[in-house]
Image (tube, rainbow, N blue to C red; front, side, top):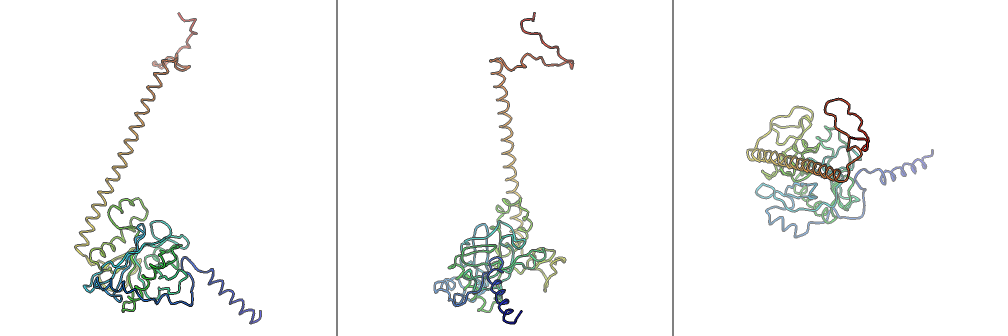
Length: 340
């Protein structure tokens, strides 16, 4: 093969890779626009100022899959986070539960750390940022997947799709957070609002233990209004671990820094979960008992009615057969006219 043909062949391979080699929602680079540098609207900046924050302050993004809601929280001058704005998620792929493997068209759940390197300013889906899946937890379970994004275009193949207008503002808020000196922000993704009632209604799911695990992080954030530090050990999330330095994802977990208010919330939630679950189970058992009782009554009534009408209108062909009570074979009855 000549050098010219080789160059043409390599160029063709590159074009094919760009066009078809993309997984999930990665998209491809579009040149010639500056959408990723569009400034925040003056109204957005004013709203941040009114809540005691600013574009350069730290932020947290929370996603609730079932409610199709994305929340942006911003740190205020008081040091705590306040919810700045909610955005409707146009579409997500799959069902409630985490992503397991490449191609399952499932949107991820868990805790992720978003850095500037995960931002995609030239996405084919308007604008996007990568969730960072698979993270340390996902890898400890051997889970696979790539290019799992939060993006625009309202179309999903394992991602969280927003409107173009929504992702434009979310992207700009993230950009300004990085420019304000923050090296990352936390992305928290939950299957639903982590209430006892929601947990109880999904208690039969194979993912219940996983959801109980990430609920610990949810509770810490809701009580303290600050994103918890997270790591992975014993193949589970651990929040606010004592000590410093990364943990072995497969190794033993250390102690955690306890918060009395969080512990109280978790104990109350667990009691409410148990009570709600017991009430649901009783409701199901009562419904089954009512159904069984109704079927028994219907059966008895139908039998009585059948016997009554059978007696009135001649019964069936075996009406003259006498029941055998002694255990001996009953004699064959004579014809009606031959009977004494």
